[in-house]
Image (cartoon, helix red, strand yellow):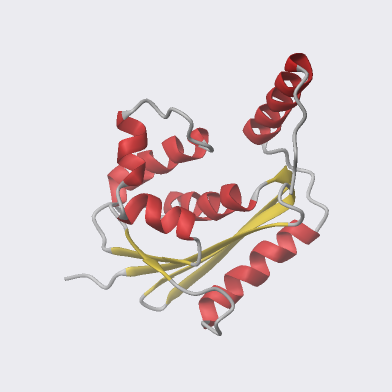
Length: 170
């Protein structure tokens, strides 16, 4: 049996929504790769999920065992508790981040990674490194546009204005 590819991921958003970033650390045998990127306006959950997607995109060989460690219950539970597959079967009704979940599924079908939840900010070395990568990317005044999020946000704003409803943000 092959050594597993070990992946740690994290996402961050300053303000949520606000500037955001993702970070990932991939390790296999003696190899190590760090990934990060930022967007000018997004959410924490989107960055948590994007970190996983970006990590999986970097794996070129299908069939290797993959272990993904994340401090995101949103991501981990959606997969390990099979919510994601129910959302898909029901046509993605009332599901946020459908664009990213669909992108994730394409990579999931190829690699079939196993997910493990880890407590954030608990001194787990690689999780802490991902937090630094994600937070640094979010703080770097990113200019990349999370097009689908900004489109969704604009549609929500237009809906609120056209119906005369007000939106409460707590």
